[in-house]
Every structure is written in structure tokens, then in C-alpha cells.
Length: 103
Image 1 (cartoon, rainbow, N blue to C red):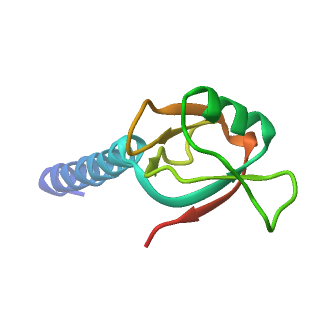
Image 2: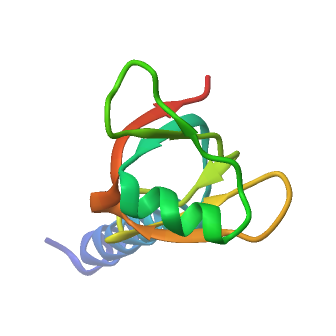
């Protein structure tokens, strides 16, 4: 490889690495739109304490239905739920039984 070829290969490699890091950074801070989720009793208690509405799921015994607007991506061990009004609630992902995404 000539000097120019090495320089071009290096620039292309840095560009691809930069692009991948940018996509990962964007995915880490983005919010995912959610129609509703089902949580267990522990998650429901945390959401109720924060002042949000939780309804027992008629089709799933022991589960509770919650309707946040957005949530964090699935990279972390906790899920932050963002509601229309009121404060955001952070619960462990193990408390979430089912995600229903909007769209």
C-alpha cells in the first residue's frame, strides 16, 4: 500500500467509527414511544407513589397496565417512564412484563 492508500484507508476507517459512535450516542439518549406497558405489583406501587394512574390488567392476573408516553431505550437495567403530566418514574426492567410500542 502506498502512503496515499494508507491515508485514505485511515480516513475512511475513522469516518465509519465516528458514524457508528454517533448512532450509538443518539440511540442511548433517544426516547421510545410506548402505547402502554404491563408491570408487576412492585412496579405498580412505584408508579402509584409517583402519582400516576395504574389499572389492573383484566387479561393478565397479577399485572397492571400503565400508559406512559415515552421510555428510555433497552440498554440500561432500569426503565425511565415519561408521562404526559407529572414526574418521570424509574423502575427496574425486571418489573416490566410486557411492552406495547406505539406505531
